[in-house]
Figure 1 (cartoon, rainbow, N blue to C red):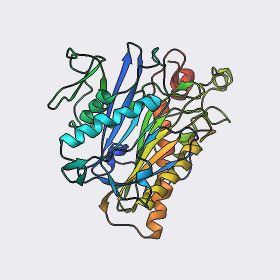
Figure 2 (figure 1 turned 60 degrees about the horizontal axis):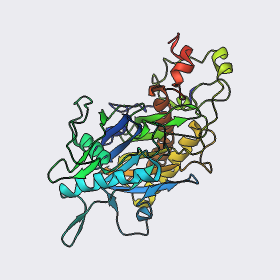
Figure 3 (figure 1 turned 180 degrees about the vertical axis):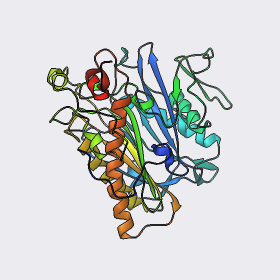
Length: 378
């Protein structure tokens, strides 16, 4: 049974994070040669967006989160990086930071600018075969470039690497060169892409998912989740994806309940010991840093509705809240409506990640395990 949506609420034009005015998304990932990992960048307009954060997991890997405390100086961020690679993957933010600095975007200081780029990572080490095959500054730069590319461009492979090592620096636009090939994905895409390329969730293939909602007054709220959970994404009463309950009319209407035989047969292998679900929730309203932190906090409610259990000792669950400030600040009732929508869009984003994920050895896709959901065998 679907939860009841607010009257008049509908998905945005792309049902994705880019429905929030001014935000852009770029995905880059490497699969093969020991790699199964990637990076996703949420790129703000040059003036930045107001940001907050809420960290609930007990094993987080983050960068610049303390800066988002409302007591601290900087009000706006210029990008948010979500990445695989555990703590190693935080270096992907360096490639994004360099790209922004080269474009003259950042917090102004004497002599130049300092781009503000918070980041969070998931644990996907070794899922491509090589424990140290992790995102680096070069992959971050590729995701940044994908975010800046026109949205209509199809996915494209990286150009052939130059000679000179796995992450050599050179001047000009292509600051980083890497010997490992990468692939990008469209900004509105879901699935085993970007930061979710190596993700797993409760024994199933995880990935990136995204969703949006336009409230009756025209306000947009959207989320992007990287689903890599220790907990299960399944409703215990029948293996339906827990997040689909919060879908908007028509969004998940094509899905059927899984066949009981399929649900009974699903016995996942032992879930990996380290995980983490991370993401971004955003609105086009004008909010303060404190309100952005609250926005991120209620998105965790949506995470916990879609993943059970959440916020465990082996998860580093982290959500960033962003305000694009394209609309005036809301009153108390308007803010409450946005917070309620934020929880639901995050739940829906988790469901989209699982529905679009690509299965692989040791991590089957949800739709491979439960083909009856689509009304047949796959």
